Length: 298
Image (cartoon, rainbow, N blue to C red):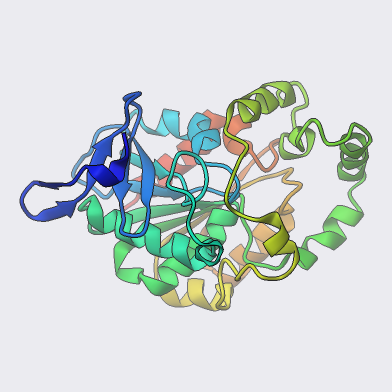
């Protein structure tokens, strides 16, 4: 069923175009230019939902579910696939696959679902999109969680990775095997969990309309075009920086650096876990989020 063929005005005061997904796991929400595949976990309560911007952008949100299922026992969590990946709409003009459209899709999705103000979590690349979002739409955000992400350019990671013997060893092993492990031994610290993580990845749709070549060629716009430090200082939102101690994508030193320039932020480090710390230690990871969301807002 094509979500574009189903239109409805629900609850009278919400202009929503929504079609239920046939497998019962989610729904398609028309945000104007594209229909997004949306999955809502937990029960909608009195407080704001937690809206999640996933990473990539070449896969959908499903790889994040292990970390959010424990949280959904007592929180309303909303995840969605970016345009052009996962189950969301595709076949847009090439120039419509840019980070700023993800930010606007998120803004429209929150409006379509009638949420008003939300708590916002950005994971990995999605963390930089979340920084852009809070700069563009600050009134829609109550709290901000930056998970396994960075406010700094990739060049700032390189000195830490260059001197990290275990990272270099794992990277050489991945390369020698022709990358068939899809960086699973780099994204996951506990090597006993790497096969399970790889199996999960292999179950996801590997295709995407997002072009790696456009990124390599410099035609992809920045995920956060402003100065992230300035944006985060100026936004005035409670911020949680949530990071794996052994992150080999964005080394933990960068999380400490961001926390140092945001003295009112909170920093939670998941020990003995890498970039996908939500997968390695879902209960620990989700508990940090639960405690942050449960604190009173000044």
